[in-house]
Amino acid sequence: MVPGHEIVGRVARVGSAVTKFKEGDLAGVGCFVDSCRECRNCRASEEQFCERHPASTYNSTEMDEQTPTFGGYSSQIVVDENYTLKVPEGLPLAGVAPLLCAGITTYSPLREYNVREGQKVGVVGLGGLGHMAVKLARSMGAEVTVFSTSPSKEEDARKLDAHNFVVT
Image (cartoon, rainbow, N blue to C red):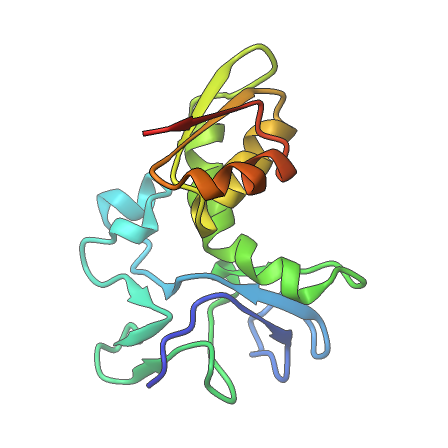
């Protein structure tokens, strides 16, 4: 097993009950591939906190709790269509994959707190998550300040269009 949870690829086969995808479609998979869909957390659209068994993309098991999941560096992966995203043709795939982890990890709280024009957002650290947070918060119209212990990151923060940079 080699970890990998930002998966973009072509659908090779679909099951008889699949309605969202057909063979050849471009699809993306994030950090989990299934859940029970019945527990309190699943019913609240928080499947990542499934009380029975959140089936992670790698180093986990499928819902049978026996079949291992090997991650995005596998030659193939089986994923329920409810945990798979359609990827539009023509997008640069190297740019799509990070959206499946760092992208959703930072988008979710920005969306949850309804970030919009005129608000201020602070981003602590400018790594993979910080990079995405700056870009997303800016696209929502927020004034973005990056906080970092590394003065050398200021140039990158400015290239990402952060308004302010603070060395902590």
